Image 1 (tube, helix red, strand yellow):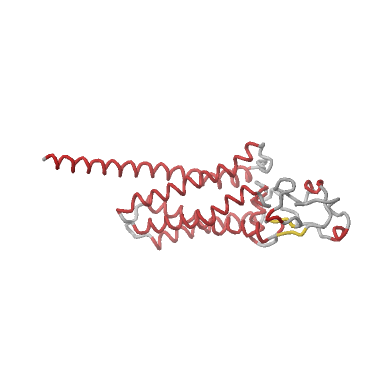
Image 2: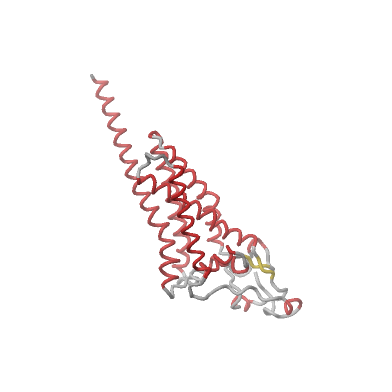
Length: 273
């Protein structure tokens, strides 16, 4: 993505402005507070939707499942959708002359292998690090803990395309199934919840496994905020809830199968009479 002699070397490179400096300060500032409040706002919106949409007869478990899936869809659409927007539409034009040393420039974070260019474009860098809008700032904030989210990591972007365009609609579909409260649709609801939960767990593993296998070069766990809030808590939600849903789906399907087997047995015994 960046080749030539030097960051400011030759041609128009000497007049090119430096790229925006990614935010790296660990202090809790306005962006940190606004980002956390935005998450709470989405959670509040999901709960409000459950109050408005679900019937009054809905059980506590149904309400929790609805809130989780609605919150899941909002996070995927609003936050991760904005991440994809930054990856495809927020860019910084590189100077014409670069060197391999530029890959280690403090203002630039390249996440693609050598001679591999995002969307085949050699003269631009893409990602939240190079934007100044509110959603760019939000992802610059999270990128302080995981640098991949400030630029374009091919694995992360590939997973987020599935998450935003498949996972989010599926989560909303589950919410609709929960709203209907059809007794005949119990297994249908649990089936789709199980599919989504499995996808969430797989996506989480594929997000962090490459880091673990390479010594976590992009992760910063140097302080409480980065390690326990950004990386552990927020990502842990998409482990705990999917695992719980898989367990509940297993129980519901096992119960339904047992009931079906009992009905078949009764019908078989009636035939013998």
